[in-house]
Image (cartoon, rainbow, N blue to C red; front, side, top):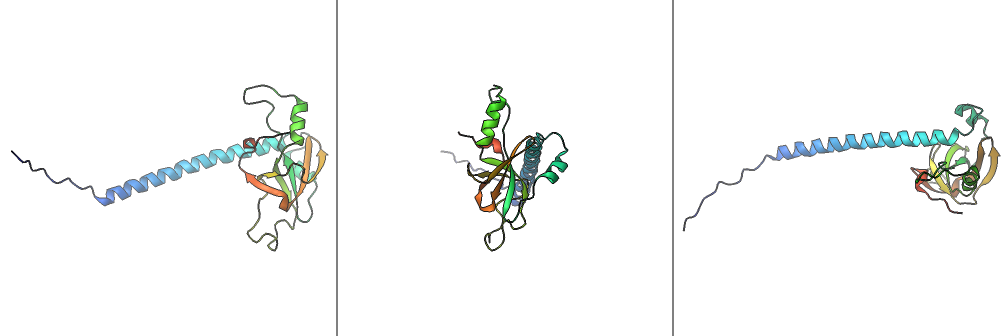
Amino acid sequence: MRIMMTEPAKELPKRRFALEEKDLAVEANENNKIAEDKENRFLKKLQQDATSDIKHLPTEKVLERLPNPTGYRILVLPFKGQGKTKGGVLLTDQHIEERGYTTVTALVLKMGDDCYDKDRFPNGPWCKKGDWIIFGRYAGSRFGIDGGEVRILNDDEIIAVVKDPEDILQYK
């Protein structure tokens, strides 16, 4: 019987593994930044689409003309959604309008001076201007503007903040 002696396995330096891990971490960071930038561009487009229905003035002028919420109130623009389904079926204006009345997602346009004060909300604000939020179906006061409706909610009526209002399904 013949016994073969093999050379001990060569160990790779630990430094090489550390460098590879660092390279992978840098690459992951870059990929996260790219994905974040893409998501931010998408959300900015959604916000622009949400305010573009008000046609007679530029967006900056529209926001100036909307009422300023007082105290702890928040002015929001309910999300109407797309004019067609994922399958490509075009929706009627009446259907889109009805869906707007039953929506529970909205874009925060303005906030009152006393929103999320330190006494009532010691952990900080639940949302900020430009966020997409979820609120109760019958929450707030509704009123019409040129191009749709807006609502004024109390700061404690915000249920959640979402990244994409398309993720939330609307029910009648």
